[in-house]
Amino acid sequence: MSAWNYKQYALAPLPPLDITCEKPIRFNVILKAEDGKIVLRYEQPDAPDRNYIAITQDTVVEVALLGDQVYFSNELDAITTKEALSSFYGGLEYDGYDEKLDRYKIVRFRARYNQGGRYGTRHRFNINVDLLQLSECGEPHWITLSIDPDIKNPPPKAN
Image 1 (cartoon, rainbow, N blue to C red):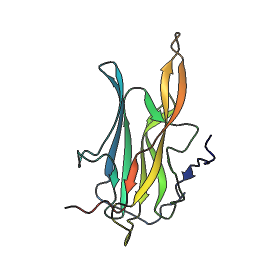
Image 2 (cartoon, rainbow, N blue to C red):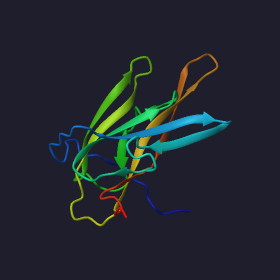
Image 3 (cartoon, one colour):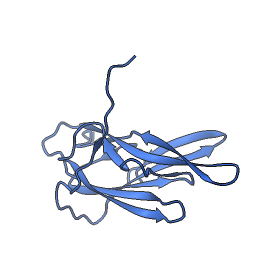
């Protein structure tokens, strides 16, 4: 039996900096069925081979959920961290509201670049989602899940 207590930490209520950027880092989380198997995939459209979020400057991060059955959690903050990182991440905003299901598909938050940090510093975070399951009579039933990709701030040094 594990004695380790798992905690989730909220992002700072206000952003760590007043960040305005022309284009946010987009991070897609895809949950779907393919060939009879459930597939969970992360992608950054601007960096197709990267399955983590790379912070190279003060920026806005946008996380979008792709799939018909996955929405941000109603019970938990959409984004949490596994350690206290509120000096780096904050200002969580929700978007992409589905009025019928009372759930969101997109969130944004501000990220402060880890100036002087070691290359490849890994900040573990959670994406808290509700998985939609319909009952036999079509009523929604929700299963809450936490998905745990990484933020690398700063990312590994490019060769």
